[in-house]
Length: 361
Image (cartoon, rainbow, N blue to C red; front, side):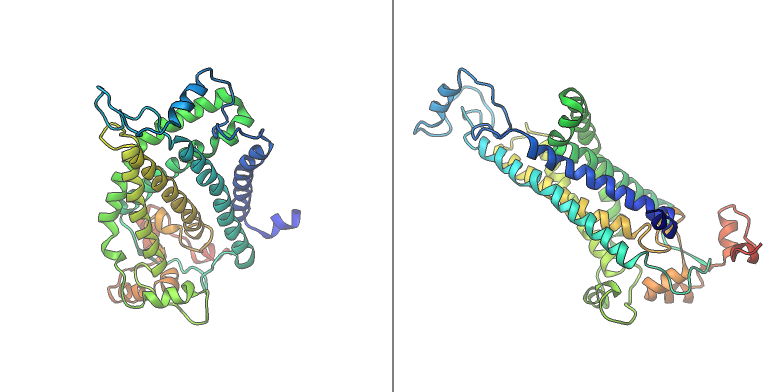
């Protein structure tokens, strides 16, 4: 174990430890569920206390009468005395998103860890040169970080609401869970509209550069360079980045619209619309969370030089040539490359001497 930490960088160690903690987080609900007492078939939520009126209401629900009756109360579904589909919906929610979400996220984490163990960090041939090219404006970086931070907050609070019952109650008890679940619900509802606004800003800021063009299909067929030999050509954004962008926009819009429906139950939609919106919201969120794990890995410690784009807005010219050669030709033709000294002065830093840059004393 000591040899492992000596051979790997601090960033690699932190990533593996974080993956291990998340692995434990996702496995605990399954262990808690396995240890929980068997649920009664008539009470999928685990409520087993006897209700004196249960038999009466069960008889009413099973009578051969129309589902909706006549009432003076005006409103959607107000004539439905008992929602006979409620138990089915509760079982569906427990048997599907609650059960499958940990397995999906665990599989993604396992793939990332395996990829890192086998491939390691994707490096740049010849290393980084220190000569930089402007990739994103300050406004574009603010839009990206706003969307990313809000999404992470919504993902965490959403997972607490989805999986917290089986995870947190065994660990902290009902009282702590109720406080955390209530705070997560309020925070989730509050930041949801901010996610929609930042998503629209992302659409307006990056849509033009994410239109598919000639050469993108070749990138996809070669798996971004991992299948076959030879360099895979890419423009300002490659096929993988463009596809991720449109997944975020389209699935994000679906999540946002369904979320607005769920937090506005009095706008005229019935239980069926609410149930469909819940399915779209949960499964859409699972898709985004799963793919975003890979995106965060490749954009940080997974690929040499990638993180700089969202830290300073600039990227190394060697990184550009390795991943976006068509764009590299444009910046060279337009003379947009800054020397290491110019980049340092631009950011208020003292330029490094040649000996310092190469690590000589």
